[in-house]
Image 1 (cartoon, rainbow, N blue to C red):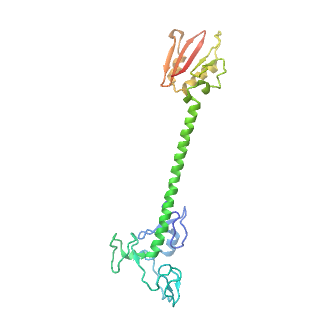
Image 2 (image 1 turned 180 degrees about the vertical axis):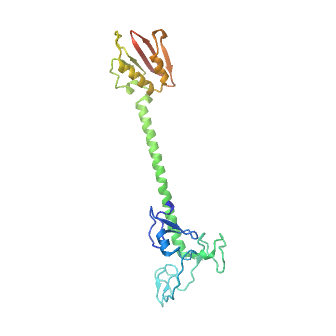
Image 3 (image 1 turned 90 degrees about the vertical axis):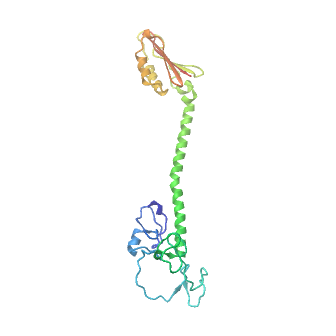
Length: 268
């Protein structure tokens, strides 16, 4: 029922709001508040076949067929809109808006039954207003989509910025400034390579666990498979220098009981 939000109920002349129960006339297509429809026992649009007609007495007061203003006995023209008094109202098809000829049972343009026709002025006013509301509703429905696109663009820009200042710049100094001062970390002055050594001073029985943990962390950050870290942990002195690579990085390592595990990362 979101399509009817903001449209005018012809019975109470109030807007239909979000959450209101709505009843749409199956003949003329005009939406009503459900309570208004129930209270009137049917459609309240003038000329609609589902309108509930009550027996009425004579009404000596003349009204303008176009705007509904009360006309005096001696007034020939409506003082509000200028429509001549006594002019027979034109009747239009409630479905397509075509003017209906007298004596026709069906609209010659779309085939709608004539008995659900309504006054041209009423039909035009309601249709014009509701058309504007429909356009406004469509614009409101597009806003979340536009906002969503803006969020996506912002995220992409943020990712690009992060890459520029991290891995995207291919500079280990920028990426790992937090460990560049560690004794077990050595980074080239141009940031093109980084070496992590679990025993930087080649001391007996010395092992830097922080360096070992950092090797696992760096491997993940650089997109190296877990198997590479597993291979590092199982490398022996007899294996010599080992190497692995991705499309952006080359990593080499060696292990010796006296020197520990030494890992070198180099940008391609």
